[in-house]
Length: 308
Image (cartoon, rainbow, N blue to C red; front, side):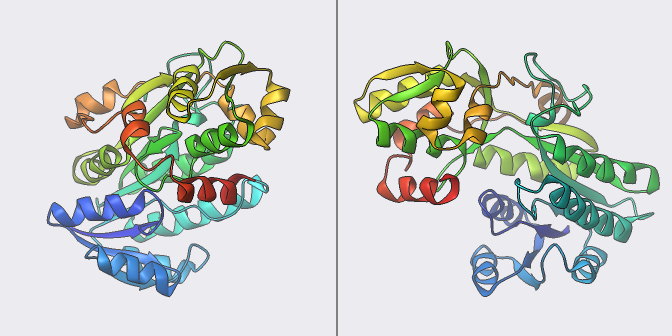
């Protein structure tokens, strides 16, 4: 299959591109810079110049492909309306290029669109009051093409996709612990947090392209934030501390992060695993903390650059 990929040179994208190439697929990847193009070429993909706002480039890439995988996201969380507009425009353009062909179109969202304080499944509706509500219009736009002759799927990734050079939520916890000399969680820390290894997520994206339609959950495990904080404390040889939400915002230097880490947002991937035969088998998050690159100075610098 010839797959057109957006976001192939990002954090999760390279693992997905590599997985597709290993499986024998031909990959063309959207590249908005020379660095992105070089990264894609090193993975065995062909660069396609353009960005998410270049709708003509997106259309050409999709029309020339046997399937589309959309992982890129444009805009800023500080301006959700702009993020929604840009994401939906890109998804609509990609979907229209595939309309009536029966080809697969896989878009990306997150399990944080689901209702908190319950174990959410792929069959549950997204919650418009969720912390990630801004991703719901993109989901709906993609899935709407199922009625227009497209095999449309949405992969909702866990909020932590862990692996080398992670610059997401967990490095921010580690950076905060380094600064303060204490590894913190909020309240009693028993709130649940989904995670998935990047290489397991890559396999899921491939299977979605090859087999699936509908909503899929990229969740390999669920941990508690306290268990993560305790592992960080062990590896840094510092104590743990239970903080209020306000104290956590100061500790992390970011109220947005504190809010996320206070959420109880478990999600099941049982339906996805049964449907696709997907079995996450790479290291867990706690194992990755012990054996990965999370505690290097480079990792701390990346987290500070992203979140401070």
